[in-house]
Amino acid sequence: MGKKISLLLAIVCSTFVFGQSKVSYYPMLNFSGTISPGKFVNLKGSAIHLNGFLEYTLDRKYSVRGDIYKFIQGAVSSSNLVLPYQLNQLYVGAFRSFGKNNWRQYIGFQPGITVSRDMLSSYNKPQISPSFGLKVGSSFSFYKYFNFYIDVSFNKTQLRGILSSTNNLNEFLFSGGLGFQLPRKIKKVRYPHWL
Image (cartoon, rainbow, N blue to C red):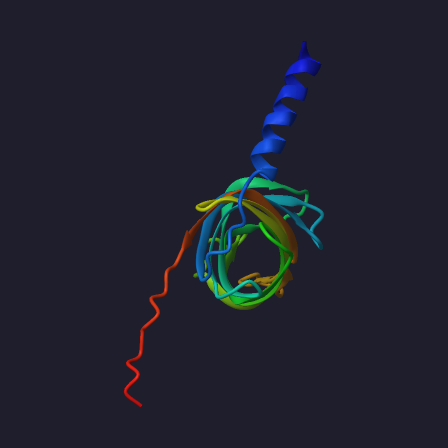
């Protein structure tokens, strides 16, 4: 019984996915919000962030994207004492896309800033430090207004405000889910032929 239901779902989903028409509405505005699990490189721990992005796709190849990450307090598993109490990250950068039809792969570089405080000195003011992100991902547009996406980003940032020194919080973050896209119509202006 379970195999029959799985086969039926696979057939319905494949006809739904492969039966879609080509989505080629550019320029386009893409956005989404999700929960992103992360893995620290130096701290041997993991964390969870709220992640949102806004992307303006200029054409099939180029786009500008902004990402924001909000660290969820208490969602850290690590034996290290130097953990973030507050960690907000904002990135904006350029992306290059590859792929055909509705399937798109992308890579981008995003400089940004990090606002952070650590657990041991949470009475301190938040510290601002420069950071950057490198993101690789893929998305599949299955309707004019929706897409599925998955991406991996490497964020290089520092935790400042520690009495001894700064602490690197380099992290791999994974995100994915349902994305929304709004095609932007550009009106073509007809020029009079008076010349």
